[in-house]
Length: 374
Image (cartoon, helix red, strand yellow):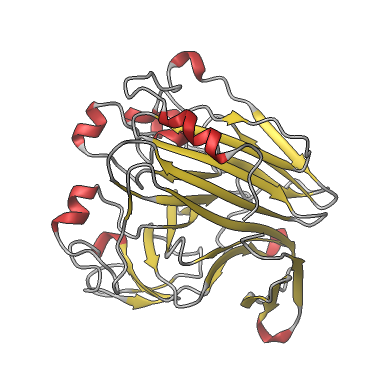
């Protein structure tokens, strides 16, 4: 793999020198937001340094931004309110969801400290690329992120190197929390994926197999009331979690009246789970989260370890040894679609292209892409 914009060795040497007691940058004096925008002939991408979220991704010449989701301060967890809001597509690092009671007492926010604090933009000369980093002393985690718009296409590629900056092994989770909101999201928004076996978050503990189902047909409760997981017209909120059998996972959402589709592709060895969050307020879809990551059960580690929570042999956590680093990646793309679009049948990768095939062999769309390790 090619080196990122700054030396990964230098970056990780710096985070290893951080004192555990160092004040995090989530204090009130460091809450001024900074936005970074890169663009090409096809698309515009905006990232917030405050929390590191992708907050705007749209086709050039249009005003529909699927990533317009933003949580109001009053709705944030109490231990997150001094820092960045949950917005757009943000990363959960160190954990997915709530910390333990002791971690909350120590000042650890929900979904990890890097999504709550200011990131640093590294200086590079490429105006279609962003390199940014963060170190979370309360989590002992460092991250170096490289974002590239690929050519003149409406597609960006992200590579992240994540390191345990402590002197002990620790459990870790990484979730890419991509969240869509109105006006892109409405009752007609459709979700397609190559996801497979899954379960409902509300029914997954202590045995995620007990109420198992297979995409796109899920259950809403113990009585196994059916739900179409591709639909956004369901009047009840839920989180559905799935694993994959393919080398690459993909998920996409499209809204016919907006003539727009947004999708993600990633290596399933890096992110084995997909969590689909459907949230309803005032009888309308309020948020749609397509969250791919290393965990499928949103509980603190003490609960994940108390019983066997593996789902078809896959743990809901990873172990990072002292000083160990891992690399993870994904691509995100936008497509302009006709209002009578039938949905995605499959997505193929042949080493030089991403090919998106519509159901019924009606059309196919292609992006030039040389693979995740390029």
